[in-house]
Length: 346
Image (cartoon, rainbow, N blue to C red):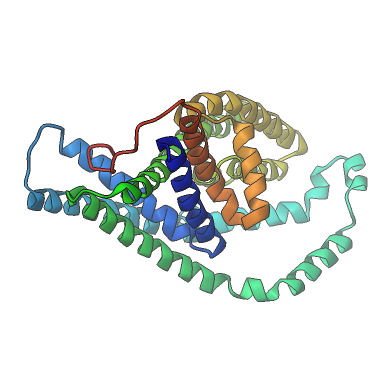
């Protein structure tokens, strides 16, 4: 079997395991573990430069210390996010304010739009029917949150342990083991590229939104409530490709509707403008990181959402970045067999 065909077969095997993990609800520990795995190895590669000879024990101790710091930072970030969602930034107030605006939104809308909307009693009947039909799922939200936190902690632990083992493991691997480990490394790197790219995009989007909310609107004598919360929500939701921006944009538009219909139109126009600008930003940032355009990622998000539900939306950019990088490698006339992953190659 040629190296190109062997690489294709190893990709199919690891990809099957990845998709099965999504199917069985293991995406959270898998992605959390891979992110920690990548972060530890990349940080270790920077702190232990090439040409520096250290013993296996010293390498193990240094990487273990780095892993401890990385895991502690992730846990601290998780606790900060928990406080933010619970009471730190008024998310509950934001949701309550949106509900009030939706309930009394007809006062801010023009008559032709009010007449086009369904009657309030019809909306209430639909909501009541949905709540009755999904009462069992709603009742398990609390248990699901606890399980998710446990899975995240498990992923943090496993990712750090694998990184420490790999960084200090000098034993050579066979042909099959090398190729499978190489695919795991490619998946890990794809996830890291997507994470870095999305963090950059979210930062740009949050900066533009902050300028609009704190500078542009006050210049016209308009001050939206819960501005800091909207900015924070924009950043965190922006870490989720495409879908996160749609949710945050909807929240800003609805809060603007609470001020006036004209402000809501202005906010919607600004957000559409930013959304169009993000196509160019995506093409530059995402294109540079994973060689993919926004429409490609959106297509795979829709496809994997139909196959795996909400977890597929999160996994789609990672899987497609991995698939496309491998696709480009398969198109090469011939490639050398992948070398075993190591601290230096990470």
